[in-house]
Length: 244
Image 1 (cartoon, rainbow, N blue to C red):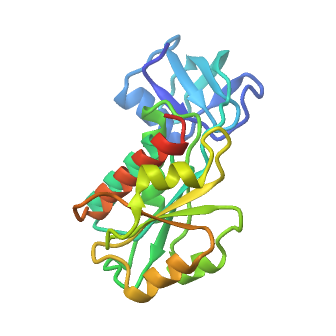
Image 2: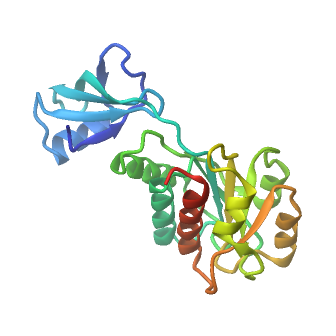
């Protein structure tokens, strides 16, 4: 088994041969110093995981030969994480951990108290991809373009539940609320809403609470930073309804 694991944007097994892009080729040859014959693990988010060998190690176009499938494509929980962007370092941490913890889609949302008005979605997608490669996931979460909270709520799917972590602590214990709201053996699709550092405004909180699919939960007796709240909420959801 290879210690190098890469996402590839092509069919697997396809022709049985893969030509990596310039950036991946440079990484393998110049950073990892791979040689012809060395193993590399690849996945594409839909065709499972495959073991391959390097058969041509050029800096601009490494060629891999697929040898065998090591894992079939699995089914993961359908969990969205909608969040207000925060400062770059903490945002990078949040999306990395959300990927490791099984988020299927990340949705940046603009709220009344969001204090970061610019965000590079491509940077987030690069962080998500790297995290998926490193944590052995077979899926790479989607990263949506930023959307206003009210627009997101208007278009929220009818069959998707909402885990709303209200900072006023009026909600029930998250584990209790989730366990009685859904069936772990056959869970519905869910989304978790995480507000900005200043929290949701009163009007936003009322709008979210009024949604028919909203389940109001508490994350405990302390106010958590946005990135900590996202990790705590995902941990509780995975324990109650996910694949933990």
